[in-house]
Image (cartoon, rainbow, N blue to C red; front, side, top):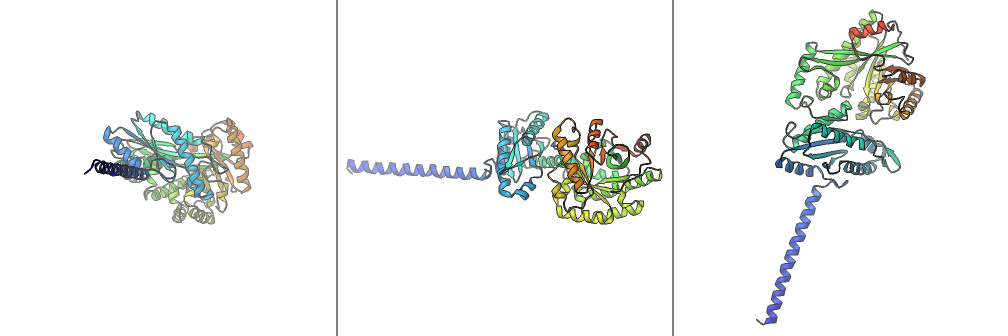
Amino acid sequence: MSAATTAAWAAAVLVAVASAVALAVLLRQRDRARAELTRTDALTGLGNRRALHETATALLDHDGDLGLLLLDLDGFKDVNDALGHAAGDEVLVQVARVLTATLGDRGTLTRLGGDEFAVLVPDPGPDADLEVLAKRLLAALAVGGFHAGVVPLDLQGSIGIAVAGPDGRSSGELLQHADVAMYVAKRSRAGVLRYDAASDPHSAGGLELMGQLRTAMEEDQLALHYQPKVSGDGARLLGFEALVRWDHPTRGLLQPADFLPLVERTHLIHALTRWVMLTALRQAATWRAQGVHTTMAVNVSAVSLDAGLLGVVEEALALTRWSPQDLVLEITETAIIQDPARARATVALLRERGVRVAVDDFGAGSTSLVHLRGLAVHELKIDRQFVSDLVAHPEDDVIVSSVIALAHRLGLVVVAEGVETLAAADRLSALGCDELQGFFFARPLPAAQALAWARAEGLTGAVVEVR
């Protein structure tokens, strides 16, 4: 073989080798790109659920010190329903940018799907640090300046926190437990909550608490406290709202937020609704025999808002001989948002029976007065977040005055909850609010103390006004 032939052959070999190497590099780059695509959310460019799992698993295998925050936007379904999914996607991209900027290098943000985001926080430190971080993310949402096209939007969220070790030892357990905490935070409007096994119906603690609740209903560990509702001028007692408490033998007096979110995930909610309804109306009937004439308001869970509720109401009215127009059932905005058709049908049945229905916590969620068209309710309860600082914040005054005026035009009675000062009570009265409720008048009280309060205030002979 000549030198020229040898050189040509060597060159050909080098070209072939170089081509093979280049092809291998291209294939590896393609595989890496494909792998990265499987770990990336196409809409926001953030990591997705798979990326969360792989990153969390690597961190847990390394030193096991990890915190997980699960964030869900409140009422985001309304954005998609009203403006379309394209507009919703536009807003989600903006949310991703705001959360990324707020988070900085403190953790890794991923989008799990829909309006749900997760944050992995290595070396999370004390629980208080995670809670501060979570609240910073929610605060960033509140001032995010979001918009869909030219439509400005205000967004809020709820965050559940889970920490590796006490709350789980795998990415799946942490995500599941953070989801439980997020649900409880959303239901109780707490904003941010750390996972608590007692609030998880699938945990040993949750199962134990549910077993104890069955016993509590049988052994009179449950009690109702009653908070008065007075006329707008504060001169007349118009009604009481019944609020359930659990005198737990080892954990002390539990508030509704401590156990109701758990109960709502089980069939016990129906038994609890029946117990509250009967107990409240029996107490109201007793007071009426003693000269205290008021309405009685009972809260109804979104889970219980179905045709079966009418049977519970009929039974309670029959057993206590209570007049239906003196019973007020309070439903939350959440109940309306979750299933508007079912809410309308159930409310219509209750109204036909003569029972009054109130929309509770109005303004806390994403409904508006437009949602109330076709919903045969009688009352609107303005959420305490707009009432408690009414005098100090002019924007709250504008919101409250507008809601009162529009609600009155719809023929609705307006109740303000969370009245804590004389100044707030006077301002609400001046705005034409029909009923007031809050600590300024009285905290929720056991039955005997509620009766003593009414007598001390000289309000025992108030006449119930049916409007």
